[in-house]
Amino acid sequence: MATIAAILGRILIGALFVFAGFGKVIDPVSTASYMEAESPFPGSLAMAVGIFEIVAGLVLASGFMTRIASALLIGFTAVATLFFHEQVTNEVQAAMALKNLAIIGGLMMVFAYGQVRGQIGMWRERDRAHDAEVRAARAEGRAETAPSAD
Image 1 (cartoon, one colour):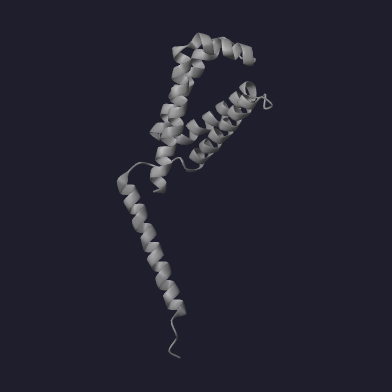
Image 2 (cartoon, helix red, strand yellow; image 1 turned 90 degrees about the vertical axis):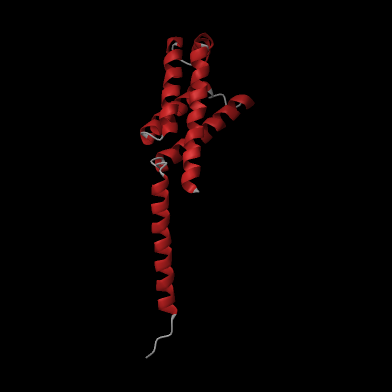
């Protein structure tokens, strides 16, 4: 179950960036004006930011190079939080900053455990190895608690 949850979580976090990127690519003028008004970044980066979010989100969701993708997205999200949601006295901005912190936390989990592959055979092999370890530990415990015939 942990493997399935890790894969689904990675896909959902990736989808968040893909959809956000599509919004920026579809309406780069609004994104550019928002960037210029709220940060020191030039609005000409709007399209590049949108494309980055789409590509990094797809790479993350696919499971290919997840550690690199998650590290890049952690940095991206941290910078976005610092420059676009720094007014934590504003209730909406504070909520957006906290949301971004949660996303960074999820991306850190992907970074730590993101190399999970989606292969059924690997899951079965891992489960068999785990079951064998549990049986061996139980047998060892029974052997230690059995009365000795001295």
